[in-house]
Length: 137
Image (cartoon, rainbow, N blue to C red):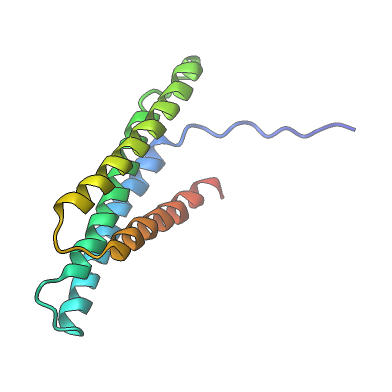
């Protein structure tokens, strides 16, 4: 019985950063749509839901952007150990930014809808995962 071995894929740094730029556009579209719906349908002048959702969206976006920058700093094959350390460092920085971001949002932003912040964060996580899943297929 012989096993067929697939060669490893080339590094996808450029594709990851291209997706990150597409996420910027998705972020802008979500913010504008939310503001239009809140202002147009609900006639809300304060835009509390939009502000709260935007806080969660931006927090998720910035945390992932920081991870991508740290994780993909080095791409040489000879630097395999450094690449793994950068991935771990990127993940730690992402979690730190997320925790500090949530703390700052809930302490400083008033008025705020906590559920909208969480929904915004999770929505951006979902969009990021869906867009990045295209890399493996």
